[in-house]
Image (cartoon, rainbow, N blue to C red):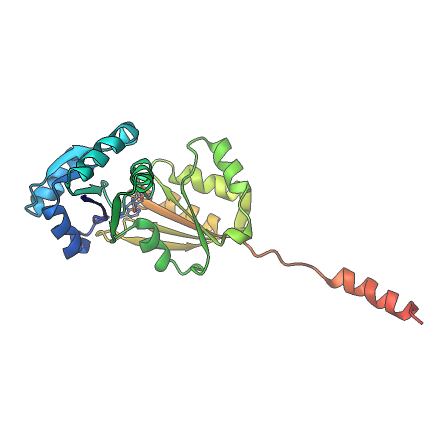
Length: 246
Ligand code: SAM
């Protein structure tokens, strides 16, 4: 039986492609790619001429059985996405779920992911965090989602696109005001890599003043305020009650 490899590819800087990732992509019989034209260019750059086929959100349920049959024939197959780690806001979940149920071997070949790359350098708490993928496209649903966040989620991390970044900051400001700390990572591992941190209004101002800051790819991170319990009133009452005790 063959192995299904989940292979991470660079999110910008091609030097982040690991030796093992390149070797596996070279050695497998097939590469399942989100966008074969996009991945073909990357493979050509590294002299990898393994056969590619498309695996995207619209066909992955159908492709699961096909991949299982390839593995049963002893073929090895790798999954890559356009950038970063497959399955992290990218296709592959249905395939991996199916292959695991069918008892196939699934092996990760780790490497870059925008999520971890952003978080580790953000300066926000990393001991507990929640990744929420992409927020809804509509402002109303986005605000509803933001309102549902509770401190126990830890740092909330999500992906955002260039054309929604300002609207997203406006919604964040409407829901949380300046009670949250924000870190915004842009163009990670690329020439214009930028980290901004501060209150929502500060970051919104920077983006409004310089449209260059709204270009590229973003990871947004939000640290929610801790709920400070106010015990002072309870203590006052307790003292009064204690005086009354025999
Ligand atoms: N699977 C990928 C990963 O592991 O990072 C993420 C795929 S998701 C479809 C693409 C989103 O990831 C972008 O819209 C952006 O929010 C984020 N992203 C990817 N590369 C990035 C980079 N170099 N800098 C900042 N954000 C990035």
